[in-house]
Image (cartoon, rainbow, N blue to C red; front, side):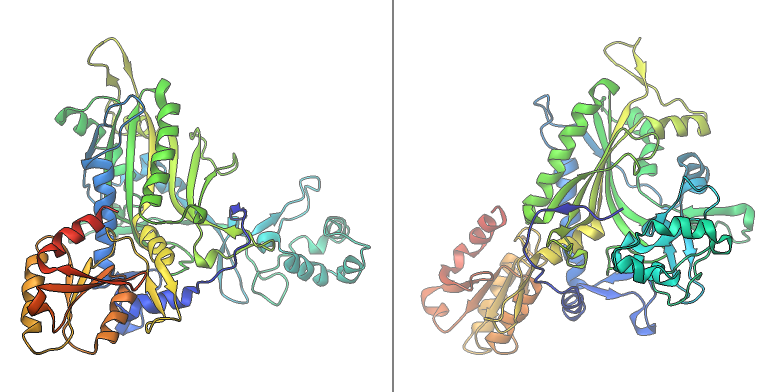
Length: 520
């Protein structure tokens, strides 16, 4: 399926290579095992990347668990959190369908040795010709169609307007030896792709010192199942009533065949998921509620509305038990634009109406009842339906970095990160203009006063221009400079990252200045 589109004609101004380079240069994200050449699909977060990721994690937790939104009934939503094990009883993944169905159909290219997901390649299947084998053409682009037609001798007539791509049907029907004509997206030769094979995405491990194949377990492929299997524990131990939610943040693992686009698709990543349990008759109301709430969250963090898209899944994308799924998508630089200049998007968060499928599956496989009894009427028993807002913490970090990356040739750094103050790794930098005249001592005193409340950076060395440039690149919203006048007027100069405007602020007012800015 083609990526979703939104109307715009604004050209791309950000290069993903520049963003990746900044991330490594300034300590946001490094290739995992970098000194050994890396390992595909795995990434390490550096000092600033860790702070950025933790800020996003904590803001999500506050928004969802500590201070959940006001529901459609006018009351705060009931929400609790859990932190479940990465390795669970393997029966969990059998019940959830991951062991038997968590796989992608893959095709290998004999020529290039590359592997592709079959659903990422356009399949031309000729249902009216049952004896004709399917042909794969990547995204059915015009140039790929031309490659196929050239291979079967129809290109010239096609370009002359005397033949259409559909003519391939009759051609193959007339020549049985061409029934397995398959063209690899990156191959030069015909017939390079193998037939699709199932490829399971769960990482296997073994439990015990003398583990055998009988002791196979799995690294979790999602955090959701840890919530579902603790549904009864939460009900029995907490004072929650339906409707209520259970939230979790944690690592998940998928043995992706083709990790790509920096940290967008990797084999180890973090999720921020919530399962909201409600009465079946109220599920549609809560589904609509969470769609709106989750869009607000990302916009409040600074993602531009024009770079966000709410896309409804088509019927061909939905799993059989789903009654609807919407994706909040973001325009990452690598998504690019279509031929008409419209932005293309990639998934950031999904909001799914999962019905009561998961609870029923675990009830069947575990033998434990998952019914909910209405405490006000113990004759009413039902298995709750579930609305699942599931966001990628790792992808969220990437979206924030891409949104914030702002080229600016008018400043020494040539770029700055326009991160919202509440998400920025460092809220302020304390910079003595010179390393003498008592300025470092004043700077350190201010740093000690602020650090209990704010993550701040004390930077004494290098000229002030280079220090400003560094803080611009790491997204520090404010720089407080101690100069020769500070000891006289008891004030510092504050520089705004985005505008580079400067103003004088009293030393005693710096903390309150930052408090106000964090709420903007």
